[in-house]
Image (cartoon, rainbow over all chains, first blue to last red; front, side, top):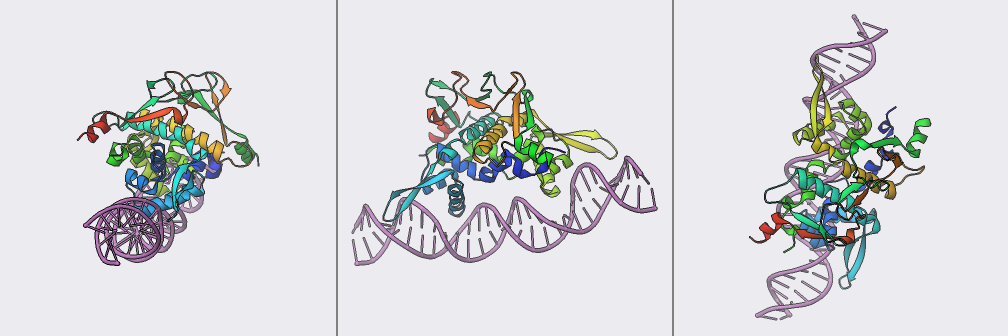
Amino acid sequence: MRWADIGEDVCSVSRALSVVGDRWTLLIIRSAFLGARRFSEFQKDIGLTRHRLSDRLNKLVEDQVFEKVQYQSNPVRYEYRLTDRGKELYPVIMTLVKWGDKWMAGDGGKPMEYEHKSCGNNIMPVLTCPECHEEIDPHDMKAMPGPALQALMNG
Amino acid sequence: MRWADIGEDVCSVSRALSVVGDRWTLLIIRSAFLGARRFSEFQKDIGLTRHRLSDRLNKLVEDQVFEKVQYQSNPVRYEYRLTDRGKELYPVIMTLVKWGDKWMAGDGGKPMEYEHKSCGNNIMPVLTCPECHEEIDPHDMKAMPGPALQALMNG
DNA sequence: AAGCTATAGTATCGTTATGGAACCAACTCA
DNA sequence: TGAGTTGGTTCCATAACGATACTATAGCTT
């Protein structure tokens, strides 16, 4: 039996994609990391229809990636802020930026550059092993069924 | 003027998502990292329709994420292998796995576990600064317009 | 006070993408 | 000879999406 055979539900990638796996959501989250909070800011950044944006933001609030915070009354208006759950999508965004920079580069250099404030360098993050601190090479990673998948395979 | 205002085209995230930003593509790539190569393997792993799979695989070959390699003649049959461009999506997949493990956990523990073969530890990769080797905290990253965006902003 | 602008949405409608099911073609194996 | 495997394609109904228009509340302006 193949591991993945068992179903999409026991797969962290598909679980994650059930939240961020559509055409717009990751762009909305990128905008949030660049400072957007209000409906119109997201719309200007991304250029999707208000209808769609309304939809996605509501779903992201439901999924607890954003929280709605009232910033005025009369009329009542809310802004959308990343929760902790949302903030932890930063690595996903940055790995996409890195891949896009390298493999989908346009003319005239990078769209954006990133400074690591705590060391002052202009960098692009790398994925490393928390134990030996080496950069991760896919060939050095061995994937094994974890408890959830083992349970399914044995019964 | 907002940076992102200028348009989706000068954004590495949206460029990357033009390749991997749909409901299925990242699942296909995940399957490839777990060893899938043939049409039917992908289909069993993911459970999408053959129609859709055919579509996505062809697009991914066009986008040079996969290459078609003939594995038999009579009838001619191809398998789909990740190119270098495709292999470098590994960090995107792993950061999604990590987020899914933490925030979308199901009962009974993790679906999968990962061993870093070169050090022998069971790990989950972290995003670090290649200069100071500290783990990246979104608050410590400063985003600035790069050359491509500066050019656009100045004219 | 009437009219214009800003913000944050909804409603409607036509087009595109997707899912489900059936079909097809070449070969293998019993 | 006939069922099964592999790797698709065709057709149709439904879901998601884009474009455009409309709504609602408030401030600013003349």
